[in-house]
Image (cartoon, rainbow, N blue to C red; front, side):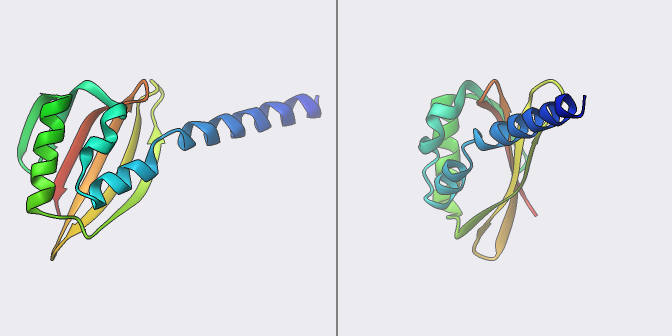
Length: 125
């Protein structure tokens, strides 16, 4: 019985580790730091909700890339850090981070459904 419980615990530990690892964390950091959100293109859903400062829009993948790249040209990121990632019971996953541009910092979060980014929020702190 102990072996079965240990095996079940081990399998759940491995599966939670794998689910966190398949998020494109290094690509997220690089895309913000390099000012090139098109690096995230393979992970973007066809429609992405973008909350950029006070403006919220549901955009096509191409419009999303254009709008965020324009923002990053205006406010080039000096550094991007990821603070936390996790998932909800329905399988939705998220990544929380912060990027710094000049004297300002921006709280960011990305929401993934079925391994595709469906929402991105960038708020000034």
